[in-house]
Each structure stands twice: as structure tokens, then as C-alpha cells.
Image 1: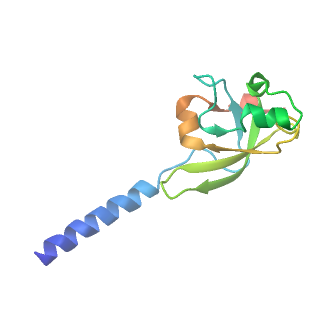
Image 2: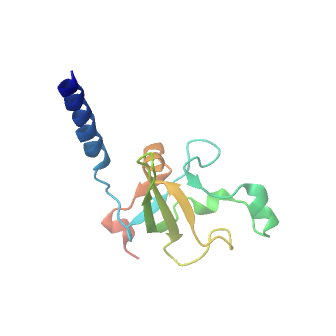
Image 3: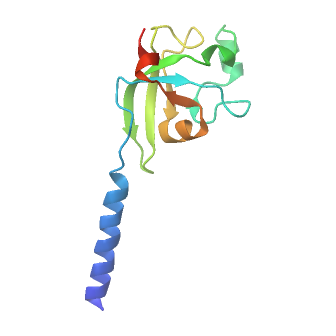
Length: 125
């Protein structure tokens, strides 16, 4: 009975290690393009709410970020194996004139169509 429990435990441990070793197509320094979300707001890119943007003296027009090329400046894997990335604009400007970077849940944003990996042709200046 103890041997069977030990074998089952080691099997689950081995499967857990394989699940963590997923290949990520994105690395620090890669170019990504922000796409228009399927709904009215972004769910996986963490932009501030519109009232906060207005209070900071900027215009809360999300249409200005559609098609914006961004660079991955930092990557971090969370406890639930989701990758959180920090995105900065490729042209060096700030989002809404005050926000230097935004964070996004990479896998979820790619799957939802909020982010798109730029092809080598698109990432050229």
C-alpha cells in the first residue's frame, strides 16, 4: 500500500514538473501589437480605469492604443503558471501621457486577441 501511494505521488509530481515547463513564444525585448478587444474594455491588459485617466488630465480614448507596438520589458511567472509581462511603448512615449508601462496576462491576452505577436516585418521601424 505504501509503495502504491509513493508511486502515485511521484507520478503526480512528474506531471506537475512537465506542466510548468511550457514553452513561451515571447521573450524580453520582443515586439507585440495591442489589438482591439472583443468587448468594450480590455480584460487581460491592465490599463487604468477611464475616470483615473481623466483625473490625471488626459483623454480616456482607448482607440489610441489599438495597433500600438509595445516591447516586453519584464516577464514574471505567477503562482498559477500564468505569465505576467510589463509592456512599454516602442516609440518611447507614455500611455495616456502619464503611464510609462502597463502589465498584462500574456497567455490570456494572446488567446483573447488583445495582443498579437508582431511578425519580423511588422517589428521593423
